[in-house]
Length: 208
Ligand code: IMP
Ligand code: MG
Image 1 (cartoon, protein in one colour):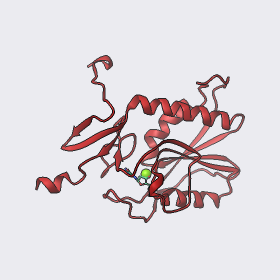
Image 2 (cartoon, helix red, strand yellow):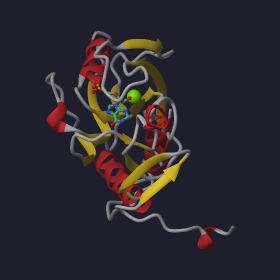
Image 3 (cartoon, helix red, strand yellow):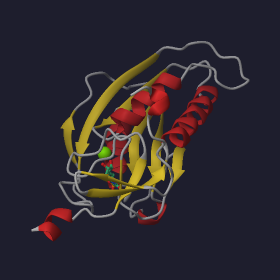
Image 4 (cartoon, protein in one colour):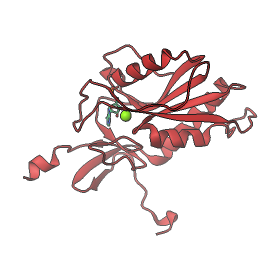
């Protein structure tokens, strides 16, 4: 099937995958457009600075790669040149297999480069209770970066229980459990190019 023939996935549409029903909240073009805007904003804020991007695995891998692809492109009117961006990864886990956080953040992969005196941008898929990012930011601050800011694709502000905010936010969303663009349910659906609300996480229990 050529790209032109691929069916357009619309906002509000319910997509069924392996018996899971997912209601489209943010479409692929909408997300891509917002990522270009975020990259533009980051580029102008870090103009003339060396930037170090730390992606929080696994959730941020998809959004993070899309974001760095746009950085340094000079999409807006401001004339910018290609820039060098250092990238590193840090792994954390908190969710287990449920749709509510365990609250306990574990480090799974550590960075292999230093962030001392660096301008660091931490990229994460979603800010929910805030416990994961607070844990990450506190630990990174001990390494004395020159600056440290956070960029998230999604922000569920009403769920916040600790005091942390992101400087760059793709979309504010309600208190719903979403998948796609790196966000998973039991490691599934990270590959989806849209972000959708998982309507029936308990589908197996209902079938049996
Ligand atoms: P926090 O520590 O509660 O802020 O949770 C952050 C982590 O929980 C994120 O990195 C995600 O992995 C996961 N998470 C939070 N909300 C969702 C969601 O709606 N869908 C999928 N994962 C989520
Ligand atoms: Mg995550």
